Length: 306
Image: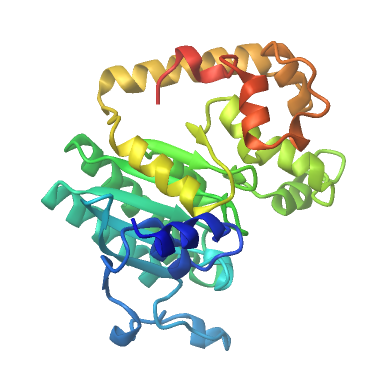
C-alpha cells in the first residue's frame, strides 16, 4: 500500500464516510469494478408514487475488487439515502452479488448501514430480505466467507440485523448499533417506560458495538477508521469459518445459555457485571484498546460459535 493510500485509510472515519468512500478506503486502490452502477439508472419503481426522490444506485454500491490482492465481492449501503433502507432494486443488487459469490467462490464484504425495510416498498423489501438471507446461506454452505462491517450512522436495524446475524464474521465499531427493532419502534409500541429512545447512552449500551461484542453478537471490535476495518477484514478472511449443522447446534446452545444467564437483566451493565468485568461504569467511555483490555477473555462468546 502506498503512503497516500495508508494516510487515506488512517484518516477516513467510517462513521462519517459515504458508501463509496468506505469501499474506496477498504479495498485495494483502483481495484473496484462496480456492477449496476449509476450509469445503469436502475432506480426504485415505487418511490415516485409517493413523490419521493430516487437515487441512481438505489442506495447501495456493489461490485468486485481486491482486498490485499485477494479477489472479493463488495457491497456498501448508503445510509444517507432513505436511511440505507431495503427496497426492491436495493435488495436485488445484493441478492445478485451473493449469487455471484456462490457461483465464483469469491468471498464477500458487506458494509451495512441501514434502518431496515422501506415502508414505501414494504412487501418488496421484506421479500428482498428473505431472498438475501437465502442467497447468503447458500453461499456460505458453498464455502464462501461473508464478512459484515458495521459502523455507520444508520446502524444495522430491521432486516439488516437479520442478514448480519447470518454472516460468517461481524466487525463493528462502538458506533455500530445492531438490532432487529430500532429504539423509536420499541418506544412507540411498548412505551417510554420500556425503552426510552431519547436516552442515547442507554441505546448505545443496549445496541452498540461494545455490548454486541461482549454478548457474542459481533466477532471483532475496531476503532472508527477505514484502516481498522480493512485490517480486520483481511484477518477475518484469513480465518475462515464453517457453516454446517454442528455450527448451528453450537450457536443455538449458546443462545439458550445466554437467555438463561442474562434473561432477567434490565440493563447492559448488569450483563457486563455478570460476565465478571469490573468496574463497568466507565466501560462505555473507554477507547477500543482500553475496552478490549478490560474485557479480556470475559466476553460471552468465548465458548460458543457463530
